[in-house]
View 1 (cartoon, helix red, strand yellow):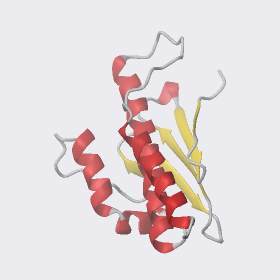
View 2 (cartoon, one colour; view 1 turned 120 degrees about the vertical axis):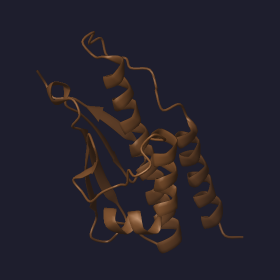
View 3 (cartoon, helix red, strand yellow; view 1 turned 135 degrees about the horizontal axis):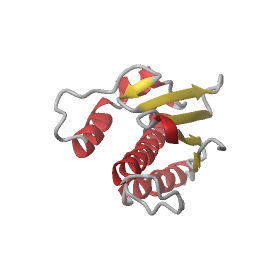
Length: 150
């Protein structure tokens, strides 16, 4: 019996559960200046990073390597459109764009390793200039948050 399908199924299940977790997670920051809209925008960005990570795992499973943004959009169009319809239901004509600004307020940098077996991404929140924030991830699926030092 092959172990690869079992391991891959387990990884996909774990990532799927990560996508199903609440998109508006607790913000441990003590910065009282953040508005509810800024917090919601940041949480939505974190959900987008989870979505990209899940799409990349699917890409690896189906095609044997991670994909650059244009290829990922082409192969996973229904998945990304589903995300848009869930979180932007009022924006019927909204579509993901080329990098860097893939959606209004979000700038993506996605670099796939030369061998296709890894990637690094940064999703920067560009909606709020004074509180610039970014989320980082890679093929491990772990997501980090970052803010500039003031």
